[in-house]
Amino acid sequence: MSIVVGQGLGKYYGAQDVFENVEFSIARGDKIGLVGPNGAGKTTLLRIILGLEEPSRGSVFRARGLRLGYLPQKPSFPSGRTLKEEMLSVFASLRAQELALQALADELATAQDPRAAMARYAEAEQRFALAGGYTYESRIKYVLRGLGFGPEYDDWPISRLSGGQVTRALLAKLLLQEPELLVLDEPTNYLDLEALGWLESYLQEWPHSLLVVSHDRYFLDKVVSKVWELNHGSLEVYRGHYSSYVEQKRARLERRQREYEEQQRQIAKSEEFIRRYKAGQRSKEARGREKRLQRLERVEPPRPERTLHVHMSTSLRAGDHVLMSDGALIGFPGVAGACKNGDAAGEQRVLFQTGEFLILRGHRVALLGANGSGKTTFLRTIVGQIKPLAGQIRLGASVRLGYLPQTQDWLDPNKTVLEQLLASGDI
Image (cartoon, rainbow, N blue to C red):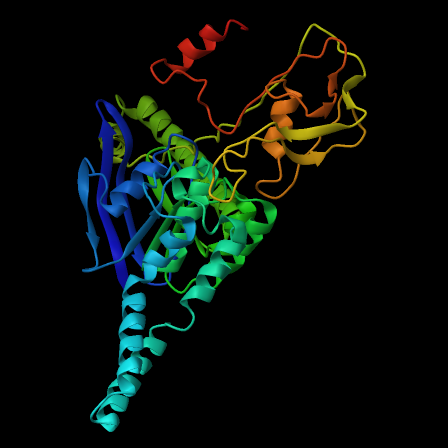
């Protein structure tokens, strides 16, 4: 049974078409990965499916009373609650039942009709148990710990959490709410390897429909059973996990290329016949072929995939030793959030000791670690934005740094891409 159906959807901004004539159907239990190049309109399509944005053409039909859940790429989470209180708010109805059940229990000792009071209590207790009243707190703990929130975060105000932590907090709340259609836009961006593995396992057992945008092919391979590809303004559906989609797409493109080439051969053959006999004895046959050729529905050639090739070169030759340290202490002299309630502690906060290390020219190094372990702080220390608490981290001779942070606050949102590049002064 379909819970969401899209018919003839099109979206344009001014004269620019984002996509057109998009058709789809989401059934109960579907687990769909939405893929496509940046700028293809994936987030726009998600918002249209959710009813947060109107299509320029076409219609979306949703099952009556459908419960939706949405994790955007940059969520806002206005809340005066703590993290634990926000999760508990999901179960407000259960907590009200819990209070009512306690009130019924208190009445048992003074009830004039103990048998009737016990019957009321038993009935209320059964409803409470069936609704998950005895397990909701353990569910909250399981989801929060799975997404990397230790017990020390339970009493943290939501307003004190970092952007990545807010994203994980909203994801936790959505998982606890169990919407009938869960829509996730790049949910893995702020997950460490342990939390990512946990989410993969959790979504494999997800009993409802799922629609997820992700560039993580390994995540999609483990979670989805259908792939939608939004590219060149159209949507194509593939059944199976991501690896199966890659193979199906390759075979589909090869088949379309063969069909295109075969049609081009037939067109060339017809055009040659028309050219040769249009004014001769077989002119009637030639004109007939010309009319058929004009009515022919042309097969479009497959569009080649655009692949980014980045070649980094410099006229300046750096030394063999690129980055080195005899050991440095990484951390802050004081940071908001060092105390349990998020207030500044006013004393230094040590994250870790690096030990001795050396990165040579040509090395490619991955920095791994749990959320909150200090990976970003370490990078900021390397590029000189933060000083180490002790020790030194040194760059080699003639080494030039390039740094791409998680957030792009340094970009001017009022500039075009070209204007931003020219403003950098390094081109």
